Length: 610
Image (cartoon, rainbow, N blue to C red; front, top):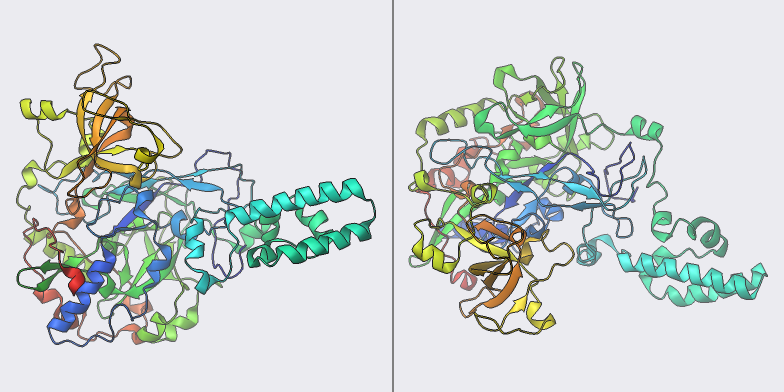
């Protein structure tokens, strides 16, 4: 309903406040994207290869428009430098209107779907973040478009591209102005001409603020009859609510599939039919974001030797579609589609280009370079049923022969990394409700937390400026206080150490987590070498959890599987095949990949000097 915003998501049914808006989704973390792309430039430069231009000058990759802050997805500790979160489905397809937000994201679940790095070649081949759910923040009537919260900052940062966009407070201010104006005007005069003149004076004054000019109607009659009751935000997008008939005629159903544990163990999770699907029916549309594969390269910098090595690809590559002879990759961002697994010859579905009017079929005639110049999504694939599919059946497509060959080779050559046998992830500790041990207990008890995890506490980062200290057994301390969404956002989580269990409830202390017990902790709010910690007491167990240290999750191992899904030869344009010798020879990156020892940490000190 928002002009020039492409596709959007609507609900055909009424959704009550606080109900789930749609099926849970996956989250893919892009680790240290800017850092790796800077290192890519120097990797090429050191080898005498010619890059077209410096990363700061080359065309921005399209995925940048779709990133979420990692604080929203528990991904804050997934990178040393800057993690960026990719949330397909609702997180990419739903638009945002600053005055009509009706859905809010919650916390994802984090686990490896039963796979372990000591025994499973599929460990690290898929994202551990799933069950990412959106809840309705208000009543959503049937037929209304769904609007996610991008945040006012997102629009302010993009004014050069999007123009002047009214922010949330602009709509609130405009509604208040209209309400008070007509209450005042109707109370002093019944003459419409006088009210009209007064409105023109008010309007001329207010529209010096360009955002108000886009929100308030100039015509007084329109302001009274069309805007006053429904509000300026709703009036700004007249088609925010569509009829069921219009949606069925112009839209595509997105809820044919849902996520669950896959019937293929090494695949992790899969997509399952929510209803019976006929042969040749469209199971799911897949709008695509296009970019170059090189944006997913990852490097390791050796500070002493002053050189870097190519070490692999971001896990995002495994969710992308491509061709063995092309540098282009395509990421599908429709709901649940990224859970569809490889079925080979037993596949019950296939992909084809869409016939939807939103699909830019003329782009199939462009060269790879010309396609990259199109800085917006415009291509759509469809997943189509090869045969009748029963309700509850898992959906499979054929990933292609090059994918199959790569997987078979990975399984043949795969070996566990050093230390895999003893590895325990933070998610395993959280799911098992592992005890929160004090510093003293960790020294006395044989149970020791794994080196790859750290305790984190959810606290107000500004606690030191908003509270007064209180004397306590460990020095002056602050009291933990709950506040709106404190457990939702990962930037409220800080490394911490348990000092003691608060003795407010005698007999409740122990190695379990009774909700009545609270803790006194030392929290490192500054997260610097000079940070000696801040003492906070009365922290409940729900505000403490284990987190993985950067680079320690399965997806960051050196021996993980990485390969895009093949787009079949018969539908992949010849003019996009810009690598006639294949991706394996593309700038000699693959043969120079460093060994799979799996235990390096990026030594990035001094990189700013580059």
